[in-house]
Length: 143
Image 1 (cartoon, rainbow, N blue to C red):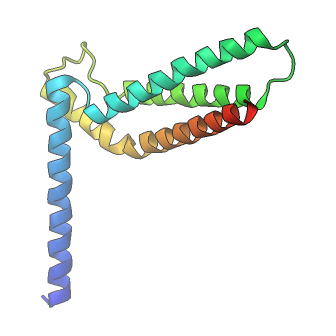
Image 2 (cartoon, rainbow, N blue to C red):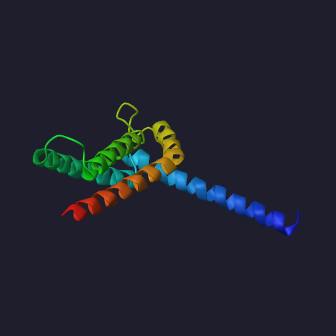
Image 3 (tube, rainbow, N blue to C red):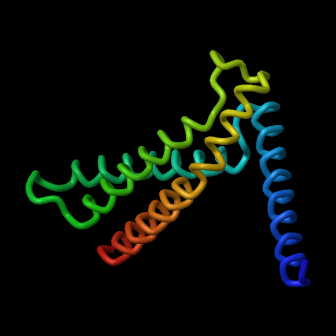
């Protein structure tokens, strides 16, 4: 085997080992607590934005006659929609009590789901952060 092929093989083995270690950490965390800390943090952030958007929408509706929705209302509605999508995606990645929080099979299955959907979660989180920033800038602009 030539040196380049050996190096390529070694790199692939290292990647597989690294992925396996990450998967084992996620599986252990799911087995112990039913969800992973990163998802809990994202879920809390999403809940905070949802609550703030509800307060903002209520304040905007009470102070303005019905008509064409303003830019702030549209951005707040879009952020609420994205937050709901993110909540649904995160709730799918929790071990339910019916699955048994301390069941290894359920933890393994949820680990696979977590690793597969991590890109979707990150995209939704980034989208929500952008919408939150747009909402904040719109509010500051209108002040």
